[in-house]
Amino acid sequence: MNPCRLMQSSDFQRVLSINAESAPHVAGLNPQELRYILDIGALAWVALSAETPTAYLLAIPHSAPYWGEEFQFFQHRLASFLYIDQVAVAQEHRRQRWGTALYQTATQWARDHRISTLCCEVNVLPSNDTSLRFHRQLGFSGTEQLRTTDGRRVVLLRNAVN
Figure: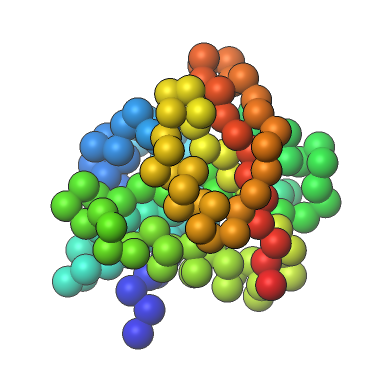
């Protein structure tokens, strides 16, 4: 049985809690921002341990009306992609492969919808070396960097969906 499923309304507070404890490596989300992202067609999966969300992944299809700078970068360069906006794992569950399970779920969704590329960004400033290593191990590559309006510098990564 896959430990991942689409986020349900009952998971909302837990996802916000995981997000808050994952700062500064993921952008903070308040309830309105999370609702907005879901309303524009983002996909939200949670990984479960004993029926409790231990991690989440937010992904935005290329056709969504999303304003994020990193998303816009890919939208101007690729015809079809699934943008991984955030992935975060609760502190007590890190290094247990929850992130990998979520990426496998997103990859299968992309395959099923004939999307050939997963895209994401990882912070270079402030540095998030753990995330960069994780994404490289999953096959993501890229060297282009972007300075964001909120003062971060990110590396933009892609991975072909096989």
